[in-house]
Length: 109
Image (tube, rainbow, N blue to C red; front, side, top):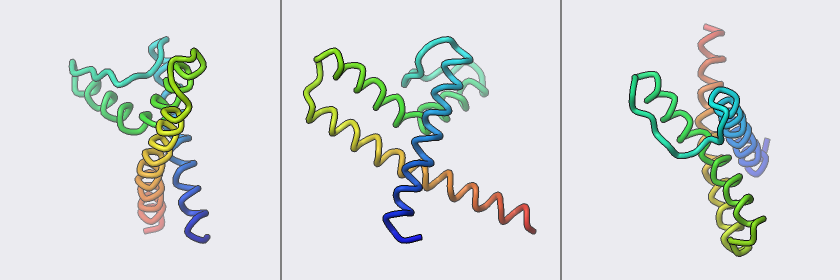
């Protein structure tokens, strides 16, 4: 796998995880995921941090597309939001791939 393929794979893993977590949130809470943090119990804190950290690319891109379709966001801002979402997906994708590799190595030992 060359460098560009690895980058694309990390972005795809990160954005897939973002969409998956946002969908889980929508199913569990019957509402859209957002950057709202719940700090009631330790499990709410953990869920809020995971949601904000790993579902962030999906939240940004879906909100940006919604606003752009309404005509309230110019195309360059949509391009910026898409680029930000891609960079964020890459970062979270690298974390996910590394955790998967560590889990696979631990299972072999």
